Length: 402
Ligand code: SF4
Image 1 (cartoon, protein in one colour):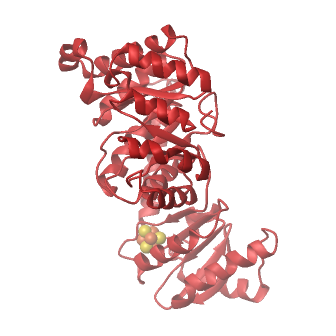
Image 2 (tube, protein in one colour):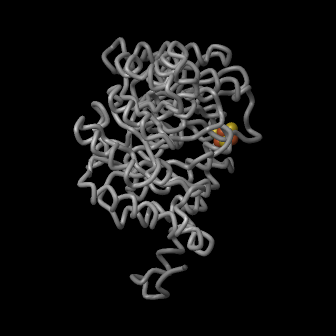
C-alpha cells in the first residue's frame, strides 16, 4: 500500500507522476499536486534533493489529496527525514545512497514506521562490477542489478517494496522487465526514463509500457515527459490504460481518420468535442465520422456520435439515428443529447419525427458501393481471414502463413 493505494497483487495499475516544482516552494508544489490529482493521478512523487525540501514535506504529506512519494538520491539522511515526515513511500536506489550500511539504516527506519520503499536501478548508474556486462548485454546487466537490490532487501528482512528498472531504451525496458517479472515476485514500477517531448515521449511510453502492460506486467506507471505540466503525463498514462482496457476513466473519443470525402472542418470539431468531454467522468464512447457514406458503420457501438457533411450532419446513438442538425450546430446538439441522456438516468431520449428525418438524411447520404477506407480495411480483413482458413491445419494444407 502506498497510502491508501494498493500496488500489485491484482490491484488496478496505479498512475504516478512527479511534480516539476521546487518541492520547497510549498504553494507551487501543492498547486501542481492538486492539478495532477484532478487529472487522475493516484500517487504523486516529489523530488527531495535538499534539506529545505525535506522540511516542507510534513506539510505537503498532510495536505495532499493523494499519497506522496519522496524521491531521494545520494543522501540517506534525507530518506530518513522523508520517512519521519510521513511520506507514504520513499524512492531510493540503494546503488547511489552510499552503500549497504546506509541502505540498512533507511530500511530499519522504514520497517519501524511501516513505510514502503521503491527500490531500483537506472541504466545510467549500474554498479561497477556490472559495467562490463552492461557493454555486452545491457538487459542482463539491468536485471542483475535489480535482482541484487532485491536480494539486499531480503537480507535486511524487508519485503515492503516495489522495484523499478529505468532505461532510456524502449526495447531494453521491455526485455528487462519481462525478465525481472519472471525472476521476482514483487510489484514493478514501469517507466521509460527521459522519454522525451509530449509527442515522442508519449509514443515511446505507449509502446514500451503498453507492451509490458498487455503482457500483464507492471503495477504502477509513470510517463516521463519534458513538460512543466505534470498533468500531461497523467493524461497519457490514462490513455494507455484505457486503450488496453485496464482501467476506465472518462469518455472515450473515437474519430475517423478522414479522407477525401470529408466536407467540413473535422479537426476543429474533434478538438472541441475532446475539450468538452473533459467535463464528463462517465466512460461513454463518443464517435465522430467525417461523412455518412459508410452509414453509422463501425461507430455502431458508440454511446453517441456525429457524422458530418457540408451543410447538414446527423447525431446518432448506439447505432440508431437521432436527429439531423445543421453542421455548425453539431457539437452543441451532441452535448445537448448527452446531457439529456444523463438527465433521463442514462436513457437515450428520442423524438419520432427527428428520428425519421435523420433516417431519411442518412439514406440519401449513405453510399453502400463507395470504397471508403473503412470498407477497404474490412475487405482486406475478410481476405486475410479467408487465406488463414485456407491454410489452416483444419483445411489440411500448410500449418501457418508465418
Ligand atoms: S469515408 Fe471514412 S475516413 Fe473518409 S471521411 Fe468518411 S468516415 Fe471519415
